[in-house]
Image 1 (cartoon, rainbow, N blue to C red):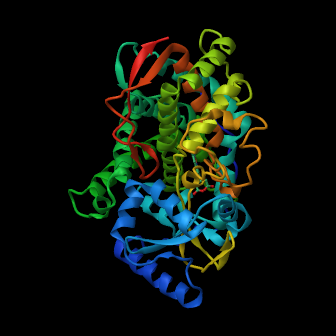
Image 2 (image 1 turned 180 degrees about the vertical axis):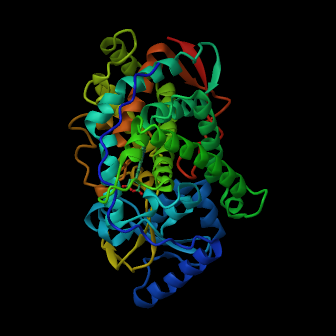
Image 3 (image 1 turned 135 degrees about the vertical axis):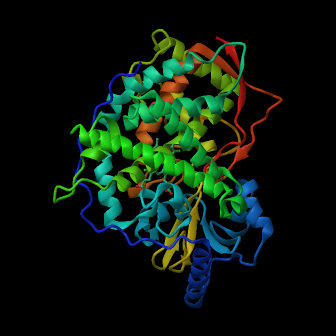
Length: 485
Ligand code: HEM
């Protein structure tokens, strides 16, 4: 069973005013998009590209986005415009574009009125939909939960769960490895990170409602846009209402007991603003949901992709198994061995999995002012997307980009010489992934404990297929054969 999760020390809640709400009704959003484009184009021409309505491009972004983006990058250069549904979207691909968007010109890009807004019905007005001082102060408030020392302190809890989870993988069976890791990652997130693991009924109901709510974002876009009592939207709102109730009960219980309780939830319950006022329960919920949302699909998909590639690249697998066999005692890493320095082969395999399949493959923004990206001017008010996935597959940065070659990441190897912005699976700059360290500890723990016990072979009858919304993942799960070591 897990060791107890401590409560990270709370920091002051934001004193900056919360942002004004945005009218998220679909018709309003479409009209706003079209109006902003008209105003922008009157002043500055859009980067070259495909500005006419195109069903082909609109569908391709949900069926084969990598091929589509690479093809446009080859023809038009690193910055181009595509009309997707009604909206003209400027894409920035490549190291320079990423660095401009994430670091050099980051102040020219907002998240609030970008496609991140689609997450509002589930996540409310939280991290993915805020900018400026309110975002910086909210991030500062949450940071103690993700410091090296805090996450290092959670390593044993993560390991305990990983060992228990790995024991469920019985040799001789076929398992949907993506489904298996989703359950494990949900337990780790709830028990170890959030600190909600004391009541198994609450945990079960939470996990179930969370998966139901999340499934909405994996539905085809036209279905997501439907409204009415029996639509996927209505089901997601019901799931969210259940989650709201569960989080609110947990907050009430902790406040009534005058004990904030463990984990990130404890930290949020304990946080007060400068006047000593606690965070409103709705905001605690939005932050908690955002952390769980941001970490769940991403971490689970990364493990599944890694298992798939290690399973079919026997040279890589042998090297990884040799390292685990020589460094681990009884097939379980120590908490210290999860810090990224102790198991270099595992580290390279993880880096290559995140290159080849960066789960958060697209980063949506909106320009807040006119700005130059990779030497191309983009007017204020435009939707701009960067793509780690497309960048990670540019031949000039990563020779044989489709090949799974962890040795790229050897010290002094091809990746060392790459420019800033070439490798961005966790984004970059001041909004780099908040949960990066936690995700890495969790992935190292799961990979090491699983592969020390069993081998996972891809099922030739069930090839990997990809889904792209809300993140890159294995479509319909990923069945693998479990073999004894
Ligand atoms: C392998 C797993 C993960 C990957 C690949 C990943 C990737 C990313 C990326 C690319 C961004 C930036 C998006 C952009 O620039 O548009 C991001 C942001 C974020 N991630 Fe992660 N993430 C992972 C796991 C996690 C986990 C476990 C958590 C929390 C427990 C988390 C919390 C966040 C948050 C809160 C942000 C927004 C940060 C901000 O706005 O300041 N992520 N993540």
